[in-house]
Amino acid sequence: MIKDIIKNLKPSSTLLINEESQRLEKEGKKIFKFGFGQSPFQIPENIVNELKNNSHQNKYLPMQGLPELREAIASYTSKKKNNNYKAENVVIGPGSKELMFLLHILFEGDVILPAPSWVSYAPQAIIGRNKVHWIETKRENNWFPTGEEIEKIISKNKNKNYLLFLNSPNNPSGQVCENLDEITTVANKNNLVILSDEIYSELSFDNGFKSISNFCPGKTIISSGLSKWCGAGGWRLGYFIIPHSLKEITNKLKVLASETFSSVSAPIQYAAVSAYQNDYSNYINNSSNILKSVGEYVYENLKSNDVIINKPKGGFYLMPEFTNKNFSTSSEMCKTILRDTGVALLPGSDFGCSEKKMLARLSFTDFDGFNFMNDFNKNKTIDLNSINNFAPNIIEGTKRLREWSESV
Ligand SMILES: Cc1ncc(COP(=O)(O)O)c(C=O)c1O
Image (cartoon, rainbow, N blue to C red):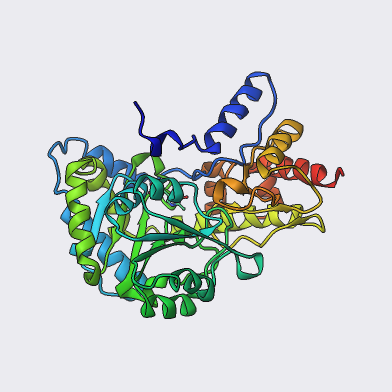
């Protein structure tokens, strides 16, 4: 009774690794949760209070989202990106993931996915019955596709529409996309729309985060939300900013929203107005500084001749490659690492990389974000001592991984 297209979808190995971790934990084994990517920080108190103050909001809201919230997001983004977005460019959804899903449903054309990329893009494209073209990216290109690689796919049939997913800072590689000029040139020459997944952009480690929306605004949909920078993944609030030139996408997205989730929870939308209207730059800077220090600690202490890593540039992740290890698949390697060391990682194959490459995603969020943030607020410095105090699992897990990598 299940459709073939759904039958073939497997549960992501994120879940499998979690189940295996829980099983080992029950047996009394210490697990280092480097597999799961969730903000270690608490939601700013003011925003939580706004949710409490708005718990009485009981009406369905407009399907495109609460006008004040769309206004706040448009103005926040316009300021950040020196653009001129309006409330009508914004669509609010129950997480950006759901909006991406609806985009796959409405889009007529082929989807271009860089490998590695986030686990949900490909299954969503399959459910949306769109053909997927993978681009196997290279470390020396920061794990992002080049203009030439994108063009090579498009040139096979220039009459089709194409949708490229570009996620920067990236899950799983932790890298930021720098070759925006050349990607823009390809977009401008072809029927190419870019979904710029900027869910980690507030958590860039250097101030100079560049969005493709600044290079080709008319062809870029910005996707973001509260989940990562605000520590509010469970609130399920995401948004798209869609330029006027892609208005037909906005219109049909609204129809699909109205036929599925109707509108995002009203109290959450009212509370989110504060997240975009008020200034949380101190909280965001503190979060980024802490993540940067912790990420760099892992990078410095894990990289070796046998473990190649690009230094993380933003978000929660880095992507080690264990060059001296030879398992039949990266998934088998991650299972062995979990069993031998207690460190949970996700295999690169989950992110579209060849399973023969011994790549894994390491999430450096297994630490006490609340106390780390309070300490940083007080002392304004992060040193080995603070990492020791607030991120002992990071230190111990990194050490165990390092030792494992050396045990040939
Ligand atoms: C790259 C990327 N995009 C999108 C999402 C989904 O975010 P949301 O909570 O807004 O659905 C995630 C969450 O893990 C992610 O890592």
